[in-house]
Amino acid sequence: MATRELQVVSGTVIACRLFDIADSIDLAEAEALWGQQPRAGLTRGRLVSTPSKAVAFGVAPLDIPLEPVQLRLDGIDHWASATARLYDFGVTRLALHIPADNLSWTGFTRRLIAVDRHVGPAAGAPVWATLLDHVRQTFASTLLRPTREMLEEDYLIGTVRAFDETPDAEALLQRIDLVPLLSGEERPLSESTRRDLLRQRFSWYTDDLVVMTWDRAFIYEPRGNSDVMDVLDVANAQLLEMRYYDQLLDAELPNMYDLVQAMQRARPLLGSRRFANLARRFYTLVAEVTELREKVDNALQVTEDVYLARIYTAAHDLFRVGSVNAAVDRKLAIIRDTYTALYDEASAARSTLMEAAIIVLIVIEVVLALPRP
Image 1 (cartoon, rainbow, N blue to C red):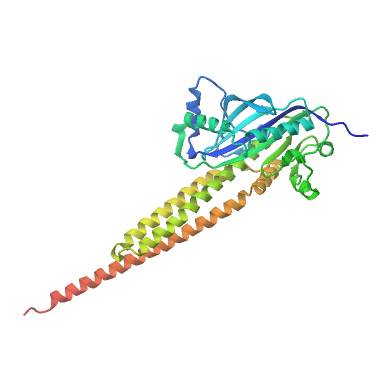
Image 2: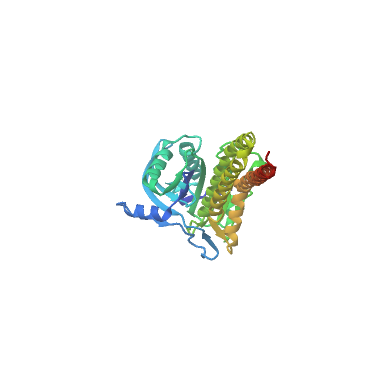
């Protein structure tokens, strides 16, 4: 006898879009600025069910409620609640929360796929630009060095708080097919692809489940806390920032090579000062990027919570944060080596200039010492 399909009693589809909007955001000023608005509801991000000594934000982000957004999914209008989160290292995360209650599991999957079609990365939905413009204009005075080129990341999460039954995690995996939800594909996929999609799954209690992929996740959490979503959010924000620094250094390296060649063609007598100024510029760039990366790396501090630590580590691996981070390290190392070489060049040029000055002085002294006719 076929097993009856589970019904989602309480669920939500959350579409997230993250943007790099500045080098940093003054969250204290943003909090005070939002407090002047006629509407309330601002909160500082925190992990709900985890002790602060186990996992905590480095600097708690700012969570802001926005006006609801109307979406038309498969010919039916739905109201989505909208939120923004501001991180002190210059990232804002926008999210649309679309209700998905009282649906069959198939209906829940279709709801998530419909959301992806409407506001996903391939949809070009104007709703994200509208929300982002609102956030940028509202908090313009809190943005330090706003970015011109807009980098972004997206993530889609299906969350279920209650089914019409209460299966444990292993039974749940047998009762629902997560592959269409995680892949966005309604056609049957190969067995190897299915295994890959379901590889990153985690449970702490018998009645919760998290399954993650590169750009989607499913979360079954009867207690309704958002700690796992917050961890995924931070990992995505860190990926976005590492991509920003990677592109920044990609653009800087060719300029660096051109400047070094120009310095080498400069007049030798002015070489020491020019090499020193250029070395100082590169040193400043390395120091700024290193300082900003410290903020990103410390965005979430995981010490004692084994479960969230595993999810956080898996998210970093899935999102390839480590590989992008390594690329940034390599480019910083090139700039540091160039700085060292320029400093040595400046020192050598200065020594040459000093030696020439000494020789000139000796010649002058010899000339003055010669007997006059």
